[in-house]
Amino acid sequence: MGFVIGIVIALGCILGGFAAMGGHLSVIWQPWEFVIIGGASLGTFIVANPMSTIKDTGRAMMEAILDRAPTQRHYLDVLGVLYTLMRELRGKGRNELEQHVDNPNESTIFKSFPRVLADKDLTHFICDYCRLIIIGNARTHEIEALMDEEIQTVTRDRLKSYHALTSVSDGLPALGIVAAVLGVIKAMGALDEAPEILGHLIGAALVGIFAGIFMSYALVQPIALKIKSTREQSCRLYIIVKQTLLAFMNGAMPQIALEHGRKTISSRNRPSIDMVENETVSGGAASEQQAA
Image 1 (cartoon, one colour):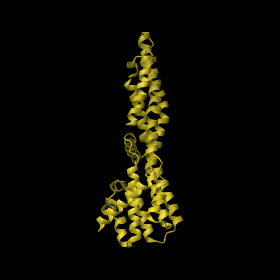
Image 2 (cartoon, one colour; image 1 turned 180 degrees about the vertical axis):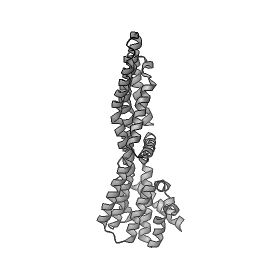
Image 3 (cartoon, helix red, strand yellow; image 1 turned 135 degrees about the vertical axis):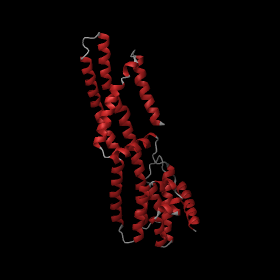
Image 4 (tube, helix red, strand yellow; image 1 turned 120 degrees about the horizontal axis):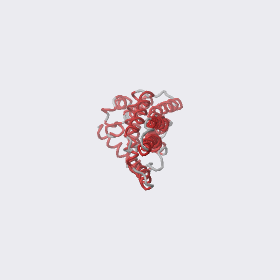
């Protein structure tokens, strides 16, 4: 909703201000100028990026426009599944827990937290490091270094769409100049026409510069920044898992380990201690009942 409101305000002020100055909005509507700029930027975007990044950029744009950043509910679910797994690690045998981490899709623990299970990468991250804890001979500092490396890799992969769109945004003003030059070339072929016609052609050519700058700074760049913000927030889920499991490996009780993870959440979305306790205790109890 915020994205739509922002675009409406930007377009309304630009077009409304132009009309208020006495400009004719019909002059700005030059579809072939937009085709040149949009087609050139799309073509260079496809040339510069692998198909996986192109597809992910589409998904990232939808996430940004629909504001699908993690909410407090997501954080509580992650803490809930971690609490339940840590309770299992402390109270039951390795064989019983291995069933959950080896096949999370069939695990009663993960099924109790469908938002976590829907994020396949995060689920695998949790299961992989729980498996290392089960093995029992891994040192905490080694696990921490491995987690840091994997989180950096995940973050880098998830921000590829941001960097791709930023490159497109940087090139759009220049592509607008290209469209304007082509328009001027067309206008030069009509020097023998009436001044009104020639002026219209020159005005149409200059729309290319306007369109390139507007698309860069008012459309593509804001979307890219929104993607960066959304994806970085989703990567915070991995930090929560990291800090929680490391605290648990260092001997903290499950409830204390959760506090290590809770403190990594932004204060704007951070659930209170009471909320975490209520959610994790109820979630853990539910999981134990289902497992029984």
